Image (cartoon, rainbow, N blue to C red; front, top):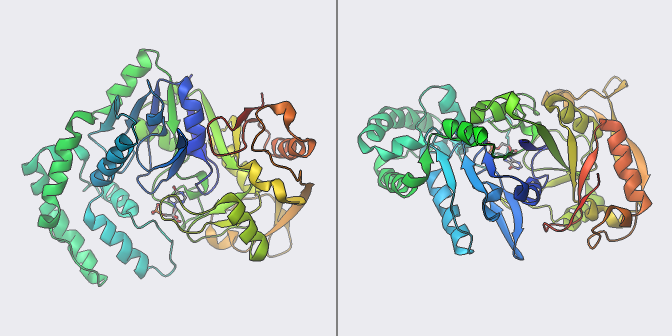
Length: 422
Ligand code: IMP
């Protein structure tokens, strides 16, 4: 059965760990949206690896890895990551990347910076050019990875595009970018990637017909979705389930199950509303205990308690079947653990309506239910029956609220620190 794994919060839920744990049961692991704004952390032979573009299945021998046309690719970042991973002793084999993946150009990065400066409210993007590259797809002027294999075609496409970009950059007071400053490097990158580049739509259809099982690796999270997330504080791709179909060319009939990954609390990087956000000493304690610093940019993450209203929204709009609950071990020191169950609207009404409009969401207050803490370390536990009753109470409370089971429980960063609950 083909399975999708997606983040149900604002990214950084521990998808890398979840995929790495599950990958051994699948033949193919597929990245289908986002770009190198993602940071999927996994532990390989005791070493911490942060993957940004390569599917997390790359660390599982015998697993195929595919990057589809739904992903925006900076070819230099991809090659740097491939080199880095090879240097760790992990072979890059059985790896495929779509010829139709939109390319992130240096101009996109520059535009990301100048647009961010010019906005009336900062989004806090990763400044990797993700938004401008997706804009080009919608604007029908994107450059694709396959174009890097043909110098003449690439140059013909780049000349008018570069003129257009530089006008935009200049208007915003930024430094323009010359094609000559990067074209050779991009062409060389194309050559190095040539043997991996292919049309991934028929490739995935073929794998499917051969009966190979596929694991779809979502990036970012549902609350960062371009339309379902807290707009405008979102990313420019579609991390919700629809992005999987448009990003791979597989149909809904080829998806069997959706596993949603959520932390036992909540974090967010960048700007935007966050109803259960914590401030002061408790937030510092939680950030330190959970080591909440961005895998891509190193920024300290904003932290808060679990927001069940937001989680239920994410579960419902994606048809999530079961949860992979991560970082529960981080809560081991707290005497009591509040979970957000309702929103108090500015007019005093209490409801469970997750309004993705950032302005409205920023005005709600959280209403909390407090659960007893377990006051012990969970990191060494490997079996469901070892878990303290308070952990079970926490899990059961979540399950009763979102109406789907927690199937996997992560009690630490490594692959073996995962407990199967059902
Ligand atoms: P962009 O994706 O770089 O355009 O950034 C838009 C927003 O999404 C910013 O708030 C980023 O911090 C956030 N974001 C993008 N990718 C990730 C991720 O992988 N994890 C967490 N936040 C992310």
